[in-house]
Amino acid sequence: MNKILAAILFFMLFGFVSSFAQDAECPAGKQEFSRIDKDRNGFISAEEMSAHQQDSFTGLDKDKSGSLDAGELSADSAGIHKSADKDNDGLVSPQESSSQFKEYFQQMDKDNDGQVSEAEYTDYWKVVQKF
Ligand SMILES: [Ca+2]
Ligand SMILES: [Ca+2]
Ligand SMILES: [Ca+2]
Image (cartoon, rainbow, N blue to C red):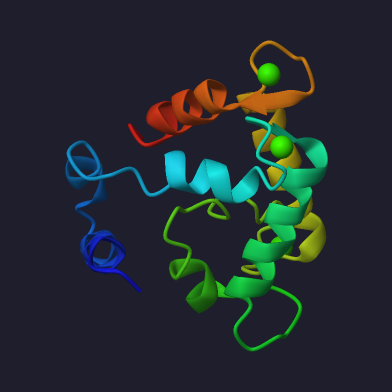
């Protein structure tokens, strides 16, 4: 874990994220985009988004229970699963995670061409992080 990430996690724990995010490097910014864009064509396809969803889900599911509980969700540094628990049982299932990411994908894809460009991606996170 690098120092910047550690600092971000630290500040998130203490609820300073909204003020901190303005001058810190965006955790879901450029770097994240190139990680998701596996074939490096400058766009995130629906398949790449789905692969990213499965990676983050598996990464967060530390006890390998097949769903994300409150403790695991609080380790979600980008908060991407925050609103995924649609049935409010306190757990995020793979289905809930997958439909949440499909929702993100549609929201990001402003021009509806079925792909998320880097500009669409970073614009989306700029807006989301204001909340
Ligand atoms: Ca791609
Ligand atoms: Ca649930
Ligand atoms: Ca697009």
